[in-house]
Image (cartoon, rainbow, N blue to C red; front, top):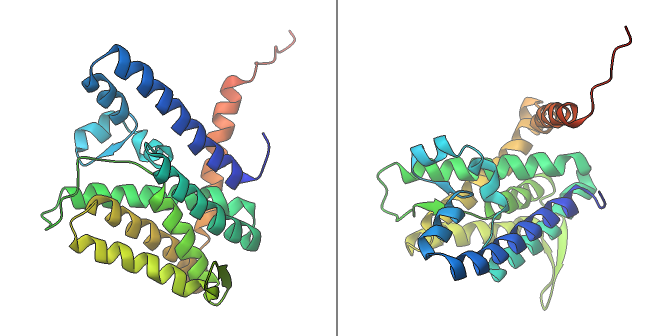
Length: 234
C-alpha cells in the first residue's frame, strides 16, 4: 500500500523470491527434488503447450519468479533505473502496463520459438523479469534516445547507446547457445517496448491506456467479489 507502482512491482518480485527460497528449504529437506521441481514449474512458463494450457497463470507469474540472488538483483536494479526514468517522464500509470506487456510478449516469443525448428537450445521452462526490464529499456531509448545517464568510470552516455549494447549482447549470446530461450524472450520484451512508442508516435494508438482500462476492470471485478454485499431494504 506504499510506494509508487514500480516499487510495488519490485516488492512483489522480492517477496516471491523470498517465499520460493523458504519453500525450497523445507520441500527439499522433506521431499524429493522432483517434488520441488514440480512446484517450481507450477509458476514457470514452458515450451509445452499443454503445461501452459493447464497453467494459464504462468504467462504472468513467470515474470515475477527468480531463483538466484544475482538474477533478481540485476533485474531489479535495471528495472529500478529504467522504470524510474519511464515513470518520471511519462507518469506512474505507464509502469504496470509496460511491465506486463513486455513480460507477456517475451514469454510468448519464448513459447513460439520453442516450438519451431531453430538452431538454438531453447530450454523447457523459463522464468524471470528480464523481458519486462528490456521493455522498459527499449521504451526509454525509443522515447528519449538522447537522454544521458551517468555511468560509473565512464560519465554521461546517451541512453540509446546503453540500450543498444544490451540488445547487442542478447543477439550475440544467441550464437553461444547459452540460455537461448531467455535471450529470445529478452528481445521479445524489447520489441514490445519499441512497439508501444511506435504506436504512440506513428499510429496515434495508446496501447498503455487500453491496457490500463483492462487492468482496472480486472481489479474492480475482484474488488466487487471481496466487498460485502449491501442488503436491500424491503
